[in-house]
Image (cartoon, rainbow, N blue to C red):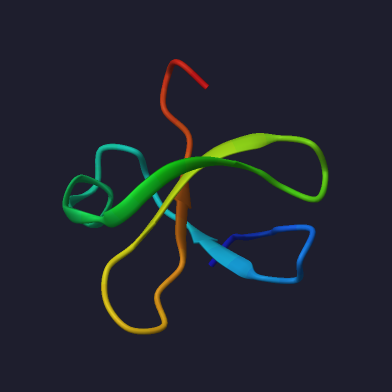
Length: 57
């Protein structure tokens, strides 16, 4: 399982952009991570922090 970390310490699980979880995610937004990369992030329930990159990232 690949992860990416935000500057505040929050860790996101990396998922494929076309996955069911990415399509159904809530609170979707773009976020800059600790390494300066920009990811789309969202949640799929309590405690889930997901990140993915599409073709436009």
